[in-house]
Image (tube, rainbow, N blue to C red; front, side, top):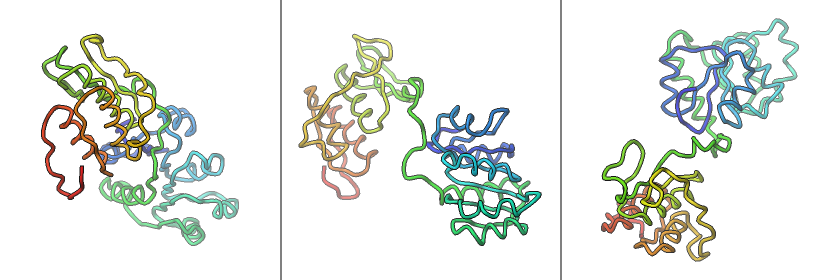
Amino acid sequence: MKGSGDELVLFLTPPGDQVIDALAARYCVAVLGDEGPAAKIEQCGFRRAHLVGRGIAALDFFVRRSDLVQSLVLAEAEPEDPADYRSVFELIDVPLLLLNPNSFLTAMHAAVPMSQLLTIDLDDPRAFTRALWSHLLRARALETQTLTPSLTQYHSRSFISTSVAREATGDSVLVPHDDVAIAMAQGHRLISGRMQTAVTKSAPKPALVPDPGPVPSSLARTEAGIVAADVAARGVPVLRLHLSDRVAGLVLLARAVQGLRPRPDPAGRED
């Protein structure tokens, strides 16, 4: 599997490396091996997948396990007896991309409202990638399709106190105090929904932060407010945030707990 997105693109037949590399910038991309599609989706840690295949295999899998399919891409699919699949058309309730039409795919396109029909050169990685990008954006989910991550997936970021280090590496963040490291890790956990780690003098190795517990209801109206409440409970300078943008909220909060003056919000929103 390549990439780190929150949706999975599963190729039943291997595409070129150029296609995989392009999609991996936004999605997790996997190619089916000896295991079946259901096992591969679970192995990759996803609820569902965008299924891409040449021939009829992707459609056959959809008939058996439609609950695991987020969208379908069928390229040059033509069963031996098209009549066997006519009843399947009305069951397709996911975004559908049909590539290089024949009589079977043309009939499917006419019967499935959520379908798109294109003619491209499948051996041209740029053309194939463009077609997939457009389809995947159209089929994008409103929420993450990942299953509950393992502990190794949770440890995406560590907050390191200057009491144990003078510089941060990788995706870690250096903060000026042990309590700040713990508070920032808990705040990031509350917003992201993922476990985070803190490195402090009392815990010089990355350790999962404890459950921050309930927060005051007056600040629980916004995600940024939840973080501020958690930091306030630890006696750290607090900036109450009323921002819908999670990234902007975290940046302003980080600057506040480090004693820095927040920069004006270009969108004119109040903090």
